[in-house]
Image (cartoon, rainbow, N blue to C red):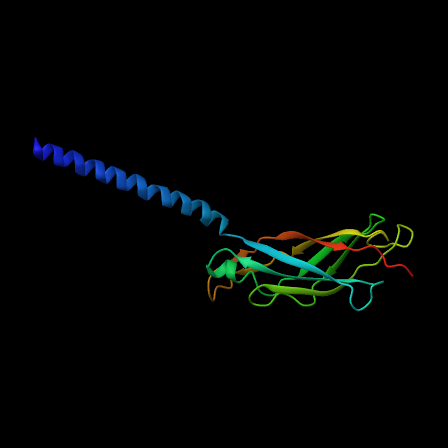
Length: 173
């Protein structure tokens, strides 16, 4: 009986260790699926120090590679990032970043003019102030799948995010 009890205990330990090993693998599979793409993070500030009647918004951000593989890492460099925003009249405007992303995926918008005005003047924000929402989108690109591979490419995922800037009321003239 002691031999069969030992076999039962060993079988239970093997079954338990197999079940425990399956849990991290299932978790790794779900994170590996999300690691195939990249994400975009950004922050925005408003500068009224130079001219309070013509404030400017500055946006800085970064495309983050969620994986260490060759394809996703090379989706960081040389991507055009565009900012889309809507005026008081409902018209949508767009502007591109100062330069394409660097090799670490960083980008900046140094001066986006935020004009006060109504729908007739085509202002971005009403004279009473408010929130301006910028939607940032990086252009989709292709990167080599493996080092030195010119025939196969990895399609970089289109990424986007939104940032908001609170604009104070227009100062009295």
